[in-house]
Length: 174
Image (cartoon, rainbow, N blue to C red; front, side, top):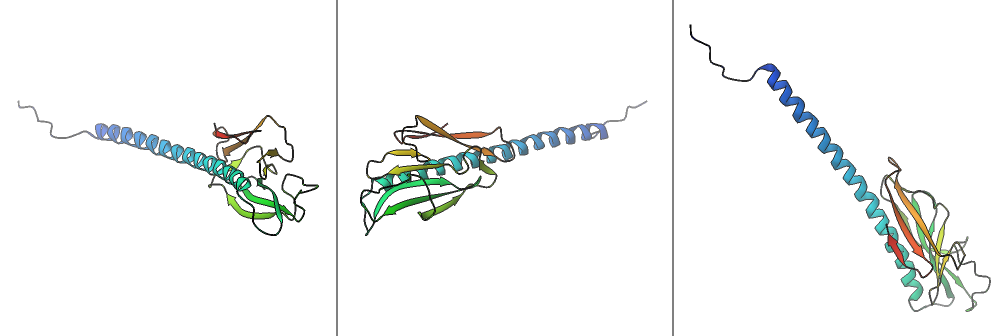
């Protein structure tokens, strides 16, 4: 009696192969999505740090115009938006200056964080740089040692980036 030759795969072998390929594809797609989210938070942290440095550089730049610019700053308006602003005064000594954002200050630009990224702990916070030194103020306070502004993913609050600002105006991302 002759044995029948086997020319192909059984149904069980095909199902096992499809299951393995499906699970590997699912794992790869999840990792790609996680990497995209981490890139969004890193991009937002870098952009926020860049805008802090922009306000600081504006405070160092020569002043033009009729009124004196007393300080430039970055104000966090809500969990996803912040603005770069400046305060000017007709008096060159800037008497009564609050050194933080107040109604009537001039907004240069309003920035929205990348989708899915939000401020964790800093709503209504403010960093200002007094001209021309620039001295650094955190919500109007001059001699704070340092402060951290935290960005996080709305979908996964465990994924964060901290922007550290010290009293000398040094900005770093951790």
